[in-house]
Length: 435
Image (cartoon, rainbow, N blue to C red; front, side, top):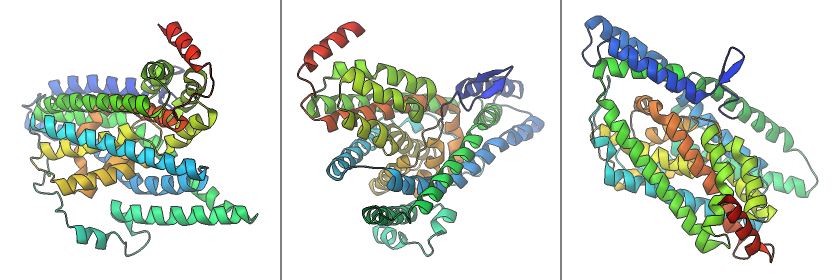
């Protein structure tokens, strides 16, 4: 679902979500200035605290949706995705490699620039030292839940991974066996998981429609109580995320150049429509058909490669989202004056990889799975409220990287030989047309 499809309708026209958030930001800053801008009266201070309540409610709803969303997304992907054996193994390795590199790039930039140290911010109820200490044996021991549904109520990411993968692999195997035997007993389960997955996404869409109200409340409250100082750290965070996304884009071009017949110039020219659509809609799902056609018609890939990368890979390949969630965890830890050690950052890597799989292809969906990444290392999830104010913009940027990653996977799967002998002429003609 694109941003425009879920926008607010006013006077018969749909207002996109990003315009709603921009309007909320402007109005919130104005109200914050009127209420004191860092030096409020006691009455205005109480009002400012009340303004933050809608954001707290939205965050509670996101936390509640996070675990069922990821569990159902993984089960749905295992049951409904049709991937050939050899191509599937290669696709899995490429996706895992790209996502891991994206997270490592994000952690590297966050550790070097340390955007969270530009300005210290403290919220009510702040707790120092909330990060969990890394205990490898304890992690293994606690990875097996006491009850199958307990990870859903506890928001335990590691246990959720174990449950989701176990049931996903078993259900996939049972489906394959029944299909080979001409049986269809698996279909009710597949249909149930599909409808539940769509139901969770529908509820998530409703919650996301409330994000402009949450942004208005938290920005007005923050400006009233603390002035504009907290936004210095957010400016540093935006710069750090954009730099990391740029480096990930360079990595994609290098992978395409070394691992396929497609030249980077042709790749970028063929990706222009898809990237423009991704930035304007903030939805990889809405961009999917444009990505697919661009890979076939403009880049010249085989249809099988384009299908695996753009259509199948898009369900698992959310490198930009994984990078963003990992950087967000380090950013908030730096704001709190907490240092995540190497072991804790490895947990961030693991949970970000898994959480990115469950990120639905709709705007702001990364905010949902981010709650699980924060919980995994013991960071207070209320600080996600700070990120909501800039997520509308960074969401568009990371969606572009997600789409670019899908196209990279397709090119790598296509190999080093073009499908037509006339491919160089096609490339030259297309690039000259773009120029």
